Length: 286
Image (cartoon, rainbow, N blue to C red; front, side):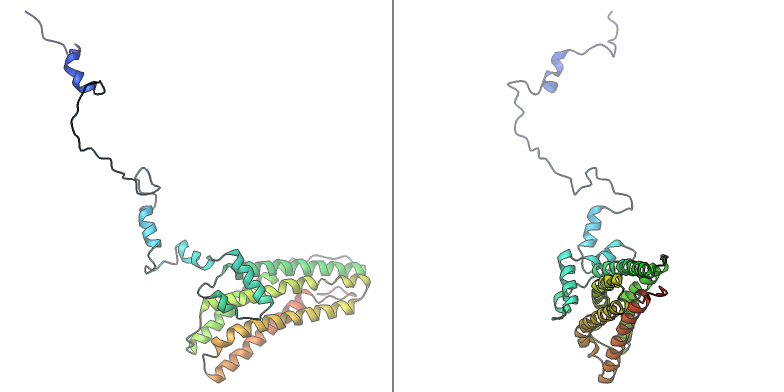
């Protein structure tokens, strides 16, 4: 009597030829309805939801929906204020130095914070560098040792960042208080930021190497003239662009605001001259 066949006994090969050897010649599989589907929906090839609980497809949907409000805690909220090309920033800087046209016509619906931030940062560093170099020259001519004053860097930062961002915010708040229909916060900040472009050449001219030849009076006149020219250019730029906004209020209010804008800018020019470039050849005070 034959025993039971064990599980390890190999099965006859002939029983599986039609299942395994499907590539053999002469095998007819008949008509099939096989189709291949692409389930790839983006860069997330493995189909996993990334950290944060939302797929990239969902995030892109949010970004592409202009009617969906963006939270201030998201990077996308602040990225919109830096959406500007370098050529646009340079063009606006040129218009600020040569205010023959209204820069608001070129800004249109795309005012930015990129230019104002970097202009304020650049002016801050240039003021400190120019003031330090001018002080070193004055000390050399007077024959005394020059001591670096790094407090000027903090003063330059407070002055430029404060004037670039705080002053236009205050002006915008006053305009909204008087129900101005054309007051836009971002435009006000952009105008004040680009208006400060002029202080870069003013600071460089105020180094005044003429003082090396022991002409302190001429050097001081050069600094006053450069500060006055910078004030005139930047004030013209501000008034030309802010006047239509200020004029949207009552006549008396607009005149008062216009005078306030000019006086505030004049104060900035005096601070730049007296804090950073008021050197004496005798006592090296500044």
